[in-house]
Every structure is written in structure tokens, then in C-alpha cells.
Length: 251
Image 1 (cartoon, helix red, strand yellow):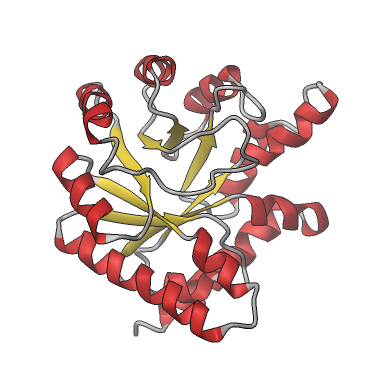
Image 2 (cartoon, rainbow, N blue to C red; image 1 turned 45 degrees about the horizontal axis):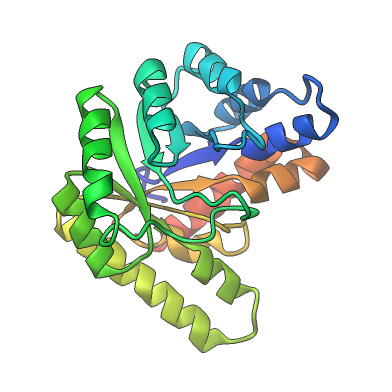
């Protein structure tokens, strides 16, 4: 039987991407959030980017008003985003690196180099009662720095692992999975709550779900892509089942 302590956060950014392609009002990201929750999502993630390429300010405001599950607000560490988070007060704020020219988030925060600039952001959000998460590479130095910053949660960037699973290089997959195992264990040992996400699919999520220290997976693009063919509810249920199969390996 699967352990019940692995949560699924559904990222709805790309529902907004599809809406914005025509500049209209549908598909509605808030409706997607409700559909995902009904299908078993434990929380909703939305990334308000500087250029508003998908999620918009009013989307975040509506999500905060309408959903009862936790809202995870992904944000860059800028004065603008800190002010918005302080006003909306989501359950959690996940600080991510952001570059205007990137298609999607390309890596984790360099918490070591950016320590001094991140410290007041973490302190401000914490003071507003917002649970702070840092999106980082699965490296011990990054976890140590996150702990010193006082962030209670880290989200491990699984992009390198996900890319490895698309190759025929089993050794590469094993190396990336070992990095995630080691990082999750190290983070938990520091007293951090460990999440993971980026590039996870129904096909590759099982091995990550089997890492015992990971408490939550945040998944978006794969779910929205599958929803085109099977509907969002069925996509979420299938992902949840794949996660549960992976978690069940723990006994």
C-alpha cells in the first residue's frame, strides 16, 4: 500500500499559456485548478512571471479567493513579486530564478552566491506568514545555504534527471537519481521539508516518488499536455497513480 505522505501540487501555468495565445478568457486557469483538486491534487502552483507570459495578477488573486487547498506562488526574488505576495498572502511562496529569454525555468537558484540578496526576501515573506520554499539544484552546498537562510522548504530541481530519462544512457539516469536521493536525505537531515519538480512525467515520476524524504512533487507541463488528450481530471488521476506505485516500493 502506498504511503500517504507524498503530495501532488499541480502547476496550471500552461492553461494560462493556451488562453493567452488568443488573448481571450478561456481556458480558465481557475477552472483548471478546481478540476485538478477534484481529481486529487493536494495544492495548486502558479508562477507569476515578470513578463506575465502565462499567469496574470488577476489569476493569482482569484486562485487565492476561490481554492481551499494550498496555493504555491512561484516568484522571482524581486521587490515587485515580494509586494504582490505580501498582499495576496498565498500559503507558500517558492522563489525561483527567472530570465526573460528562457522558455521555462532552466535551473535552480544559486543560493550560495545570492545569499545576501535572498536573505531579506526570505525574512519579509516569513514575516508575512508565508511559507518560503527555495527552488534549488540537488547539491549539498545549496541545501546548507537554504538552511542558513531560514527557509523551511526546498524544492529540488529534477530537470537533469528528467532529461536523462529521455536518453538511452542508464548510467546517466542512475547518477542523476543518486544526486536526488543524496540531496533529499541531506536536506531532511538539516530539518528541511523536501519537495521536487521540473520535467516529471507519468513515465519517470516513479523513481522520484520512491525517495522517502520527498514530501511533495510539483508537476505542470506533463499534466496539461496529457489533458489535451484525456482531460485534466484523468491526467491528474493517472499521475497520482504513478506516484503511488513509486511510493509503494517503500513498503
